[in-house]
Image (cartoon, rainbow, N blue to C red):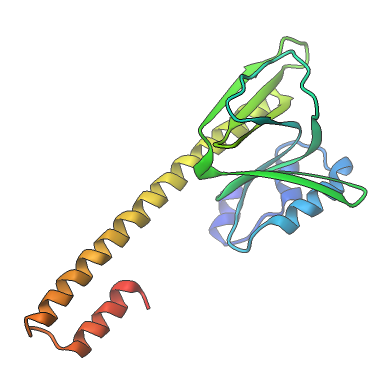
Length: 197
């Protein structure tokens, strides 16, 4: 259903995605509303979870079965551009984000307990998130993050290649104009086509 909705340019709400992922939403109403407000017009929600999250300085090791201070309960949202966490309690909103292009690694460690819990760490350039949750949910979430990272990198590489191609085409056109093969008007027309203006 998710792919069908995206194909029709229907933007799924964070609440809908949370429900699809089996997350309870009743306790997280304020965080969900705050997260919806943070979405940019050109952002697509890929996945979302309710989770307990700690922010760590980049480079720290992942430590299952140990208590980390300053854990916060809220909503973690994966979009086509970034991963962000929002906690909103009584109108006080706290958020943090990692751009997909800044994610350096994703680690998951299972916690030894009867709840099949897990810890997922997303390491960014400057900060890392450490999420507590159900092993199955966090594994699926990690897979989606990796898929988006790959798509983001390939889209960035394609954009870089096409801009290099555009510059090459413009140089060739300028040479043709300098040699008198095409007129200045023809050059301007073709330049606008190449640049998509």
